[in-house]
Structures are given as structure tokens and as C-alpha cells.
Length: 247
Image (cartoon, rainbow, N blue to C red; front, side, top):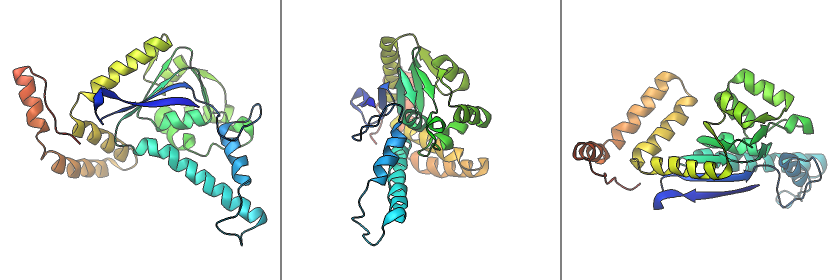
């Protein structure tokens, strides 16, 4: 897996994951056609019962496997939990664990040569670190079901039609520069408002409208105590660059 995170505009407001190829790559070296998820399962089955030596045989394999899977789930969910907006810039192949990662990001863009696949069913396993939980909310339940059961490869253009990515760029260079411009634009906005918007959207996704409204009322009743609103209004009125409070 090849990606790096970039904190833009010398501020702690936003992260960008710039991806070249999101696919299998662990310290464990899988054979041809083995996905990163399968590699992790094989690795988990090789764990030694050092923490609970009384657990042996098949029972230990189950405990070790479940512990490894929960660790991987938490690692992917950490992207979503990051209070900064996380943007994925995808080029090339994105399958298996790659789809798990990008669906945990807040915004996704890709180049026209990108392609995607929820590949796990072809490998004889059920995707288990986030795709089946997050993809339906992004592309719709029916589309997520079809993509997950067929494991078919689909293009960046189709990903745009499905809503998996927000925009398809013509080349790697255009992708990098375009996403950086978008990220810098977000980075210039009031940090409390940006962080709050992400937090409220994610919270509202998992609760009723009434609960979401109650959550944002509680959030803003404390966040509006900052001077950011006055700064934004004053800057707009006097046509100057605002100075916002740091997080």
C-alpha cells in the first residue's frame, strides 16, 4: 500500500491521503492473488499464545484471528475518527483493503486510470474491516450489494456515478494539484466550523434526524462561544482575510 498523509497550509486542519495503489502490502508477503485481508488472516493464525497460554489449538486460532481483525478494524476506523477532514486522492488500483481505507475517508477523488473492486468474495472471505459497513451509506444499499457479491472491477468514472468519488481528474498531476487546491481551500476556513461539520455529519449518519438536531444544538451552544463567527462576518464586510482561533 502506497500513501502518505499531508497536513496542509501549516495548520492542523486537514489531512490528505495521496494514494498510488491501494492494495495488498504487509510485512507478511502474500502469494499471487492473495489479498491483504487474507494475508492478515494467515498472519493471525500464526500468532503464538503468549498472552493466554492456556488457550491452545483451534480455540487459540479463533482468539488470535478475532484480535487481529479487531485491531485492523480499529486502524481503519481511526481515519474516520480523526477530527481533521481526510481526503483520499486515488490513482491506479484500489481493491480489498484499499476500498476499506477510502470509504473511511471524508472526501474521495481519483484519476481517470483508477479502478476499484470489493475483491474479498473472490478470495473466499467476507470483507471484514469496514467496506460492508460504510459502502452502503456512500453508494446505496443495492449498489453496495451488487459490487460486493460480484467483486467486479469498476472504473473511476463509474465510481463517480455511484458517488464513491466526488470527481475524476484527467491525470496523476491534475489529481495531485486539484486535490491540493481543494484541501487548501478547506484549510482556510474556520477550524472549529470544519471540525464541527465533520463531527455532526458523522454523528447524524448513525442516528435519527431528531437526535442529530439535538447533537448539533449541543455542539454549537459551546462552539459559538468562540470569536470565529464575528471574525468571518467582519472579514466579509471589510474584505480582509479573517484570523480564526486555533484548535
